[in-house]
Amino acid sequence: MFNTNTFHGVDGVLTLADSPDTPPDSGSPIDTYLADQSGVVGRVLNVGVSVQTEVTPFHEIGKRIASELRAGNINVSGTVERAFVNGAMLRLLLGRYADEEETNAFPMPRFNMILSMDNRRGEEGAGSSKLTVFNVLFNDWQLQMPEDDFVLEQVGFRARRVTLEDKEVAA
Image (cartoon, rainbow, N blue to C red; front, side, top):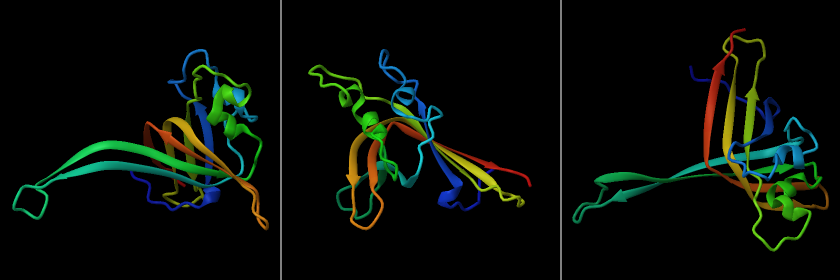
C-alpha cells in the first residue's frame, strides 16, 4: 500500500550505514569518522535527494514530435546541511587523506544513507516512509559562517541507486 501522508522535517531522521561495497582494508567509515556509532547524523536540515534519468528523443526527418523516447543513464545526487561542525562529514569525503597526506591513490569512504520519516500521531492510516540511498560518496564539502545566523556545513553527494519503502500503520 502506498503511503499518502505528509511529513514535516521533525518527522525525519538521517542515518548513515556501512555499505557492502566498502573497499576492503578501508574499515568501517561509520565507526571511523562518526562520533555516534549508531550512524545518526545530528542536527541536519535541508536534506535533498535528486534522481535524474536521461531521456533521449528520436526525431524522424519531417516530423516535429518524437517518434520514440529512450531511457538512458540514471544519476542520483543530493545535498545535506548540518548545524553541527566537527569534521566528521569532511573526513567522510576525504577518508584517510583527511588525517595524513598520501601520494598514492586512497579509497574514498562509501556508505548508505537512510532517511526515515514517521508521522505516527495515533490517527487511522498514519504511516512511515524509508528512503535508502545506496553506495554514497561525498563529492564536495562547504562551510558557511554567516554574520547573523548559525554556522552550517554542507556536503554534496553522488550515489548508485535509491529505494523507497512505504508503510501504513494502523492506529
